[in-house]
Length: 334
Image (cartoon, rainbow, N blue to C red; front, side, top):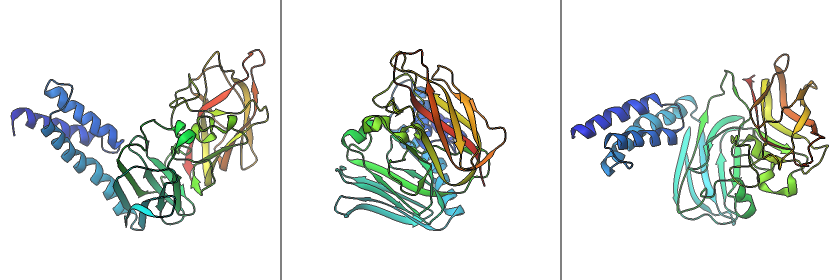
């Protein structure tokens, strides 16, 4: 191995070691860029990609697989099913499963994960979407591959092309303080997969204004109407409310809210009420900003859901369009 490649190998190995536990896509990308920088080019040479892949496989993929196989030995499967019920591709394994499918999605295709009931699973349906750590109350997850207007809430390149990598693995029920509400793979229908977000109304029924957008992990507030400016639009309904369901009782102690800030097109809510399944509630006041606004109940709340309602827009603003970009609930498992 040449001096340059040996140096690249050492640095890449150290980098991937430091990044174990973070998003694997970020780890691989950063490792590749480091190698490119060593060689004084914006693109890493082919042999460097091989080295990066070896290190990536050693430190990232094997770590996730070891976690899955070491913690839970139950069977788990992932499959792509067409509109007629035929299986395009499938994998089933103990603790972790992964498929690489060479083909093109068609309308009616569904990605399905089957696991044990009441399990926590990490699922990735496309390389361009964040993995979702979800609670499968019924032991199954079905994700309709989006087409047409439904696709507008996702990256344009997602679910396209002829090579698709999908995976699912068991994870442990985390005991520490954590984010309880994020699910980039949430869908409108009730599926027994949590977190799940619904609302009494969604502007014109369009996917870019669906309730699910507010738990997809995107915080880009100064825009609307197309990805990545997804949000929940209340259809100018003064009685509208939005809910996050956890599928189980959790201990919630902090809520972060990001109002949409596409001013002057947007109005904003000046006040609202956060309520919980234990019948407690808290009145909150908003500022005119797209930055994070933090709200904490006086004591942690045991709850199965959180509702944001009684929303009052700014009466002095002529715009009729207040909206929510993202909200996040933090707390602990019980």
